[in-house]
Every structure is written in structure tokens, then in C-alpha cells.
Image (cartoon, rainbow, N blue to C red; front, side, top):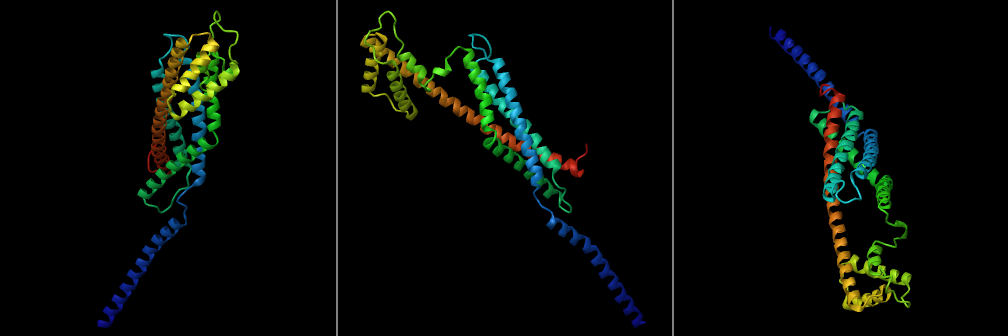
Length: 298
């Protein structure tokens, strides 16, 4: 009787061990498959990044056309400068959200399916794929498409400026307009021994650029010299020439300060659009990956 019970116990123990082995084998296979799978699908990331960069370029060209339609050179016509700046910044954020969402969705939907990976790990990998697709699109846009985008925006601005009647081809630098104000002659009182206009323009342009670009103040000697040249060129007395120099210097400082503030606002809008783009791409990639694996329903 004891021998029979012992043999039955040994037989049951062997059967249990066989079942344990058969249960553990699939788990080991899953771990092996997971270890062999690549966590990053670069082909999907590149595809999503290229699509995002291309869509950004298309929307940027469309926005440039809309901006030219909204702005008017005539007074009391079209939108104001403040409204235009806010609208341009908001549209930049919209471009980032739309293009990044498409790129992230493609990166998540086209990536390789991971077998034997926990759902939380899948969620993290999809988020990382969307973020990498956004990063690739950003680097691609900055390295390859930056000149194209600059030509689109710059060409639109140049067309608008030419439509206003300004002579862009005659500008010798960013301070050329203020130099024109300084050297504007009075035809009725212009002296015959006026100084060489070309040399004066070049010298004034260099002086204004050097002082305003570094934030330095014009010294009394500089202002006195400018007033003397303006008096000789424009046919003014010394007092009127000094007043003109002071007024133009103030206008130039105001323009430089406005450009500085505009640059700061653009940098803030650009930062906001990049952050929104990264978030949208990551979120869209999780949606695309979930639809691919059947986690989310259509």
C-alpha cells in the first residue's frame, strides 16, 4: 500500500513539473522575442518627420499669402500691426500642432509591432516615437528647409515693400532710411559746395550701424560732426541741422528698440509653437500606435 501511494505521489509530482515547464516555456519565448525586437523604428520616425516638415512648409506658404491679403499699406485699412503680430504668432502655433500631429500619427501607425511588450511600455515607446519624429522634423526644417522658408517669407515681405513704393535696390543697409532723413536737401537753399553725397552716406551708415548695434550713445563730437555735414549738404544753419540730427537719432533708437521687442516676441511665439508641436506629436503617436495594435477602436 505504501509503495502504491509513493508511486502515485512521484507520478503526480512529475506531471506537475512537466506542467510548470510547459507554462514557463511561452514566457521565456516572449522574453526572447521582446529582447530581439528593436525599441525604435527609425523608418517610421523618418517618415513622420519628413511628412511633418513638408506640411509645415505648405502651411507657411499659405500663411504668407493670407498675411499679404490682410495687411494694407493705406492708413485705416486692413488689420493693425498689433493684431497682425498676434495672429501671426497664433498661426505659427497652429502650424506646429497640425504638422506635428500628422507626423507623430504616422510615426506611431507605421512603426513595427512589438510582441510580448507590456502595454505601459508600448505607450511609452509610442510617445517616444512621436517625440523623435517631431525632433527630426525640427532639425530637418532648420537645416534643409530654413532657406526655403526664409525665401517664402522674405519674398512676400519684399513684394509688399515694393508695392509700397520703397526703393529696396537703393538701400545700403538697415540705417539707410535714417541716413536719407539726415541728408535730405532743401532745393531752394542747397549750397554749391556741398559735400560728396555718396561718401557722406557711407560714413553715416557705418556710424549709425556701429553705435546702434552695440547700444552706445552718440558722443557730442559725433553729433556735432553729423550736424556740420548735414548743414553743408542740406543747406541748413547749424542750429536746424543739430535739431534734425537729434530727431533722426531718436527715431533710429526707437526703430531699433521696436525691432528688439519684435524679435523677443517672435522668440517666445516660436518657443510656444515648438513645445505645442512636441506635445501634439507625442500624443498623436500614441493614438496611431494604439490603432495599429488594436488597443483603441475605430
